[in-house]
Amino acid sequence: VRSEIVAWIVAQLDVLGVAGDGGRIDETTGLFGRGVGLDSIEVLQLVAAMEERFDVTVEDEELDPERFRTVGSLATFIEEKRAWASDRS
Amino acid sequence: VREATGRAPIINVRDLALAAGHLVALPVAWLVPERHWVRIGRWLGTTSTWLPMNRHILQRIREAARREPELGDPRGLLIEFRARTWEQRFQYLREWHPRGWRPQLRLLGEDHVRRALDAGRGAILWVASQAGATLAVKKAFHRAGYGLHHLSIPAHGLSTTRFGTVVLRPIRIHPEVRVLRERIEMARGDELRALRLLERILRENGLVSISCVPRGRRQVRLGIAGGQVPVPSGAPSLALRSGAALLPVFLVRRGAGQLDVLVEAPLEPPPSCPQRAAVEALLGQYVERLRLHVRRDPAAWRPWGLLEFGPPTVNP
Image (cartoon, rainbow over the protein chains, first blue to last red):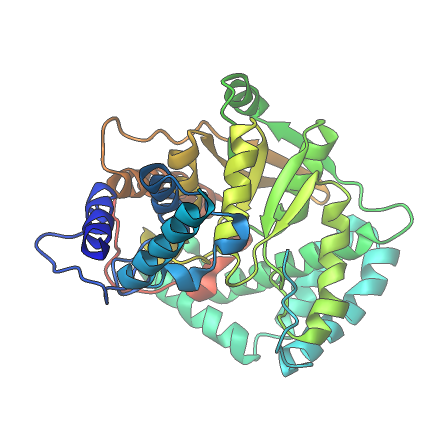
C-alpha cells in the first residue's frame, strides 16, 4: 500500500510539472528547495488532491512543513491519516 | 498567528541602528512639514553613504548604471534612495501623531479591482517593493472603502529579535492595522496555514494584498536594471490556484504627500499551460511592467541591494 501511495505522490508531482524528465524520485526526494522545489501553494495543491484521493481531511493544525519535507514523510502522513480515518469508521 | 519570539535573540546591532534612526526621525515627522521631508532625508542620506550597507547598495547601483547609463549618477541615486527610505519612516511616525499622516492619495485603476470582484473570484493586489508603498497603498484602499486582507511576516521588514518584535515592529504594524480588515501573519513554518487562509478569503471573493518582496520557498530571478533580482512565485501561484485576478500595484509619487496608487490591468496566464510555466509567464509579464516603473523612478525601488549580475532564470 505504501508503494502505491508513493507512486500516487510521484504522479501528482508530474501533474504539477515538477517531476522532471527521467529524474528518479523516491521516498528520500525532498519536496522543497533542492528537491523538486515545490512552493507552498503547490504543497496545498498536493494536500487538496490527497484529501480527494484518500477521502481524508487535513486540518490547518496538521499543515506542518515537516510532514511535507520529503516524498517519504508525506507518504507516512497519508498512511497515518488513512489509518485514523478507518479507525473512526 | 504564531509569535516569532520563540528563541529569537534579545537585541542586535541592527536594532540599535533602527532605534536610533527612529529617534532621529520622530521630531522631523511630528514637527516638520511634509514638503521638507525628502530634503531632510537627502541630507541624512548624504551623511550615511559610508555605512557598509550603503556601500554594498552603491556597488550594485554602480554596476547597474554601467549597464544602463540612463540610471544616472550612482551616488546621486543612492542618496535619493536613502531620502525616500527616510520619507517612508517619517510617514509611519507621523501616523502616530494625533492628526495622523494625511497624504493626498489617488487610487487609479480601481476599475480593475471592481471588475475582478464582480467576477466573484477575489483579487490579489501584488504591491511592488517601492518606498512609501506599504502604508500608502493600504490607506488608499481603506479610503476607497475596501477591506484588505494583508499578508505579512512577524518581523515586518524590521527585526526578528525580541526587542524588534516588542518595540520596533509596532511602529509599523499599528498604523497599518488601522486601515486593514485583517493582517495575516505568516511566521516561519506557518506558511501553509496562512496560505490556506488566503485561499479561503479569495474563494469568498475577498481582496488580498501581498508585497512583492523576495521571501518564500521559491523565487525566480528576473532581469531588471541591468541585473537580476529574486522575485517570489507565491502570488502568481496563489492566483492560478484560486482563479483570483492578479493585479500589479505601483506607487507613483507626484510630490511631497501627493501619491498615486496605480492598479494595473491583471496579469493574464497563458491558456492551457502547465502551472510552473504559467507562473513563469506571469512573472515575465510582471517584470516587464516593473521595469517601466523602475526606469521612471529608480530611487523608489527598494531591492537595489539584492541585485545580482548572473544569468536570469526568466528573461522575457
